[in-house]
Length: 257
Image (cartoon, rainbow, N blue to C red; front, side, top):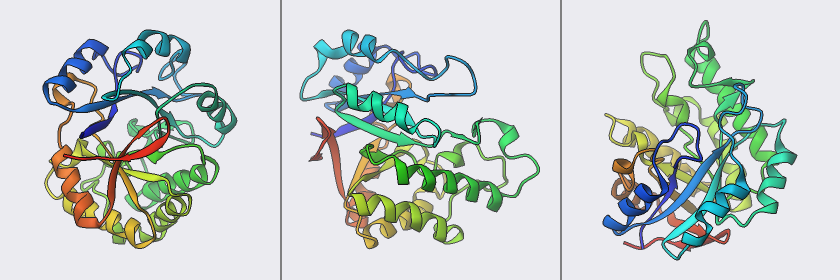
């Protein structure tokens, strides 16, 4: 079964999609789905982007099945490692994504993160935060949306070009490969002009450095986006010689069409 491994419902601060809407959309499209709600501890805005994990399992646990799994998207920070590790250790998640959303206590969605600095400076800081966190977050299954910063970067060309940042990206990919952790192909930006081609060298390099697994996720916050772009991501994985997987009970299972 093909799985959309990155989706958000109302336990995530920025999502209004109900569980019933997500479940129905996945069923109509003959997809498996993993719910991966946002957990960004110490987020700059109090009480935003966190949720009660016990309530989450109480609400959704009875609906768990081979085609509907429960995960979490951890916002990685180097000042919350132990607290995040405890959350993951104490709960029966199927899948754990680790993502960078906040750098030096600024959400990179905010325009203030980009003011007065060059693209090279900003992207280097973003990747440095990722590298520092990955050294400590040995308990995640997959690195989420390596190109997340491109969504919000306020530059004429925010695209991520591998050869412009190869030193930084190699450190990220090497760390994942050494631990046999996966990297996500996030489909949110694959429809933009040139984005797919710009990202392909990143995934090719991951394979060259010994990486094996990719997870594929739409990052859907609305029912209409569930499953969007999974076909493009599967093509990318095949082109790069990577194995697309989903996780159940924290173990990788190969995706099939």
